[in-house]
Image (cartoon, rainbow, N blue to C red):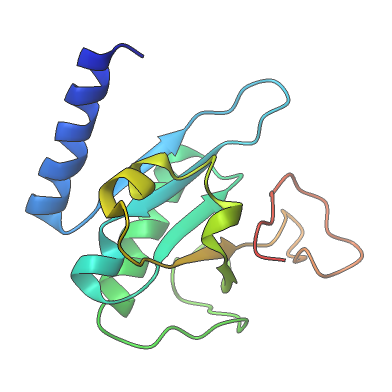
Length: 147
């Protein structure tokens, strides 16, 4: 990415944060690479951790980030507890992720917050059979960073 492209991209990030309170970034799937998406600005503007999601398609990732921000802004987030109604398709739960696990993933957030404090959660979802990663039958490509 050229410097001009980076400048244009980060202008979009900052514009979205100014207009909507946060920006969503999605990194597409490639061979041998699990796609992921994340928020930037939620921690500063809504008082809750940013959200990281690995292994879901772009539209679903964006919907989950939007629903998370709307439902939990300025509220306490239940950690490690199944939530059945964040989306109507499947239950999810949230785990804490240390920022040092995200340095290669959430570049927009690290640039946005620079030396300021911010936190992240990872959204964990079940496989197509309803099993979660901590269950023996689980079978899906979701990179878990919060372990």
